[in-house]
Length: 513
Image (cartoon, rainbow, N blue to C red):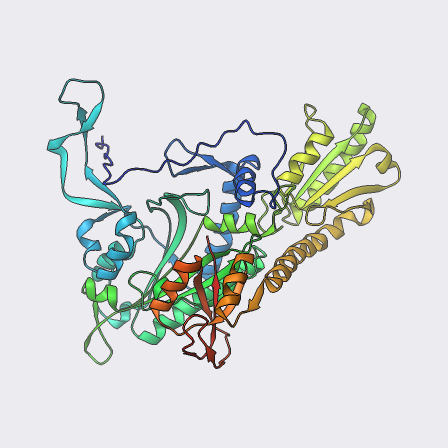
């Protein structure tokens, strides 16, 4: 048997407020308390719950089903661009982190450290266990906050010649970052993600890869999550620790705050030099390898919730909804039930043949009204109600979750219209989010205006003098940061909103999650 590892951390664990299941019947609105609305929605929609481990969460089956759909789509996208999945160790020797100075500085405060590999009874004779002094590790291990160091130590053995390049690897894994303030899906001590790590023969190949992957993320977030994003470059202060450039996609939540939905990093040769990863080039010269890394996480579920959902519960895009169509029967007699069941099964068979996830909720223990509320709250895109009188008239009642509008549809044309309606729901919720972002994005040209507008939330397009000192001062004064320098930002002469120094293009400032 393997001896269990004992996690002895250097720091105090988190203590978030305990979240109770016995909540009031009324559901708080976004306007009343946006933060509570979000937390309550995550719990009441059965997406996740707080764990006994402080700062961590339990992702429940309904929430995990959304993550599984995200995984499938993204995994196909990665493989279509030539990437392969691999897996690397959860534990990383502390000395590896110390090899790349910027990297260790960026993650040092978030690292969980394993110091012992065994527990023993307390020596003072009291009840309980403590780390066994004789089982102290020779070298402490970091619980993976990100995998650049362990992967680049591994790549040193894989790469000898230009023929071994490029390496295009991705892994699906969990990571630990000891966050002081946590919120389910958005920021937890442990979370699920994917991280791509690639190695290239030239700088241009690596930059092309990093830019390609941010495009892949943007495609996924916009076309599957129905969340509009802005692609751009991070400022040096917001750059990934150890990167030369960080590319990002930024989304706007309904409270006007920004959320970083994905990042892709051009790492240059920093990690190759730190781990001595060289290759023999076509010119027969030893050269350091060029690198990228990129990732998205279960934070995307938080983005999904906050972008689309409303005061009635979840609103899910059909492409990622665990259940796309639900059928609720309404009847009084066995004869009515039999006829409704026959019609429902025809709809179920059609949906299954078309790859539409469907459920016929024929449970007797729950009344139709309870089912209506349940599926509305869980964000099922389409609800079909089949009643005895409706069936006599040859119609079915359809309700769209995005608009909460009900309509009667002829039974004969229903099936052929379902795919079309699902597509329209997907498009509609994207357009709604885009319209909101457009409304909340505006140009600001003076400091007085900036201080006023930042309180209203949204994206502020401002001139910035390009210095870290100015960026830091603005953050100290307003809690706003530069979310990105948009790729498509036009050249425009102006003056920095804080210092008045010359600026050549606008950047996006916002408060963020």
